[in-house]
Length: 258
Image (cartoon, rainbow, N blue to C red; front, side):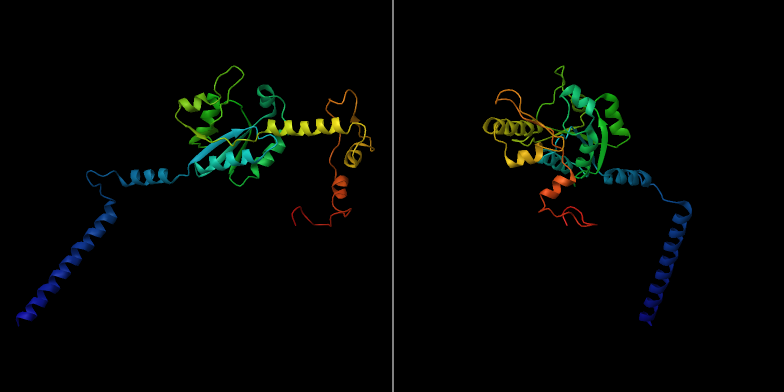
């Protein structure tokens, strides 16, 4: 008898608890979320979470003339500082004013930069120096969080720091420059090779020089003393490429690397 009454009381208690819980669920559904004292509203928490989850976007600019492994290493380091890397490629006119005319034009430099796997987006005609207007555009239109550059000084012709504004805004991060390689060094090595060949072989052209420099309206400037630099007007063409492929023309539909 006592056992039966205990079970009855337990059943009644469970029923009452279920009714109370159901009523609470219905009330929350009708009235909406209830603010808990001391805790921020749910919408604010959601916005904060979304902001925290937004990818960190970093920006790096450069000339990227005659692109080499130093450029690629810089892009790799910059990408490691964020989730997405946006790269600005400096215009031909800006390079000419600040460093001298580039070897490769803007459209070719854009293609080379865009082909690097660490690059997510490319901006053409970027300024050589970070201006206030361009920096604000990076922050507002491109959602850039940080501006990246190497640890080598980047000075304008007037001696000022090209990244002073980004540093003052607290949105600047620095990477390590790759030692031992630069576009200037590569161009210098190329000129040195041509100069040495001109000195040692100015009266007896090699077969390769004759192949590239004689005939088909192409000339080589041999005037002056042996210390001068040979100027070749050789232009690479598909016909020349065939000469380096055992005289076999490419089959239809084949691509480079297949």
